[in-house]
Length: 402
Image 1 (cartoon, helix red, strand yellow):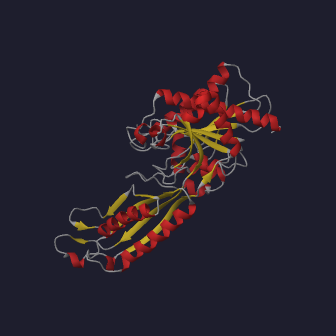
Image 2 (cartoon, rainbow, N blue to C red):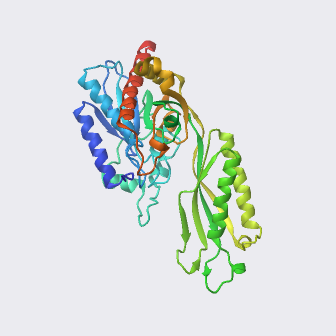
Image 3 (spheres, one colour):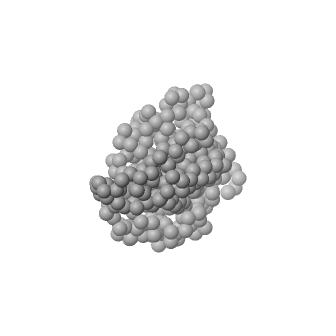
């Protein structure tokens, strides 16, 4: 499926969210980034303990990524209503805007604005990376009717805690025959746009030694990034390449490519970045046998930076207790404490409120792909543990009088 953020398909999903929460007796608020907050009252007034995730997808995959967390959250509200369970404090579900960063190129941007880590103006001015589009986040929020009046920040719209159910998007749980991942934190990562500038020239009249081939230079940089990542026990990936002017018989004079660096520790990301900046610079300044380097320049632009995250011990324990309640004596065998390799909205919520995540297995570890799949059984297990964690936290708040 394809449901890019703030597209017509995304509007339909948002409308479904809004209508469904109404039938469950929940209030709905929408902030200036289009984040939707559905809240169910508790016995006492206070901040809501929330389940949150996202409904937008990647261009060619994502029937479970994010969507499982939202649908399980809605099911939690429905179960509470059907069972006539009153929580001590309000509980809710949040649909965060543009978590994927697939259309507007900062992932988790709206939870980032809410947390105060990303400026609202910067987010509103993000331009679509979809070819042929001139839309910005603000223009699309206005177009689909989801530019809310509420200020998007944690001070004006606070919550008590954030729990997120998500597919693992990796192979570990399936390989180890585990049903649940208790997520302790999230890897550090940085996104960059690298621009390599050479000179356009005719492919048939310009000999190889006279060329300033930006695409050839970029290809060497991309290959080196992978080799360096392996040495640093990190990850380096390129997902977007744009060569200009884009003609069969013109040597590209400019290439822009994305670079995504991931590692479990902040210092490893920084070490890999320093190495790549140094080597890319040398590639662009010293002649090689490929006859591109003496005429090529390289420029780096940092697009996103997410330091390593460590989730809150109280929330982790609430998930652990939910796992034990679900699996009993098999809890240790069927669950695993794990660190997420992908960024999630919980990265930003954790900067402001106690946060934790719950993972369920991804078949063959595949995500961001049409083959992304999690079995109904595993989805159901996650959907059972999520409300248990939320209710455990509500009970903890009651005991502490908060």
